Image (tube, rainbow, N blue to C red; front, top):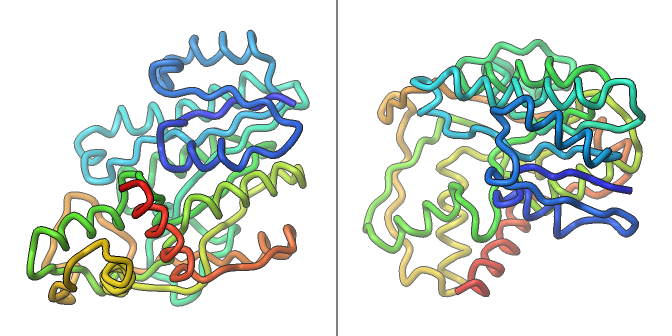
Length: 285
């Protein structure tokens, strides 16, 4: 079986390659190997390789910059999934499209289910919602949230850097979601591929947190591992005190019960995965 994996230099792309199941041959594609804004290039590649699976882990993820670059964001996040869907139409091949909690507006008081109404509040969220639609009903669409991994560009590593540089950090406390370790997400994606069940699915680590909660946990675990010399003061602030170009959902916890029931697997808490990631980060030096 042959899979095309886009975004292989990203944290999820690397995790997907590391979790590659036996029996699969994966063709790793970075932006130099495939320009996702080039529809003709996508069509030619799919025609040449005839893959059984496309795992689209690449995305335009600069949430704030997207407010000023909506065309580029939509071209990559919505246009590319649509081209992949058209290229695979009429075959037995499957597209896996990774999406986001940002397709919701944050007004819910309980976990968002796959079938709940979307109402994105940002260009990024709107582009990812459009990507879900473009991927189509035959795709496996997986929404996730707050993804991080050792060596990647993410909140955890940003906090580690700032904790080494500053005595005090101010972190938003009124945005609630769930951190997600990229390795666990990759395992879920491959698990859904094995089940071959198209539709919309959710994945996140167990537990919920604010960005403030997440930062406090990062400081405590990193200090215990010797990744930072001391724990800085971490001050909770409101979203209004840290304005950004893009509006973010205040509550974006995803209901993952259907995914866990289908896969029949455990749902590990985010703090345990954070410890594992930080140990990997320490090993990287």
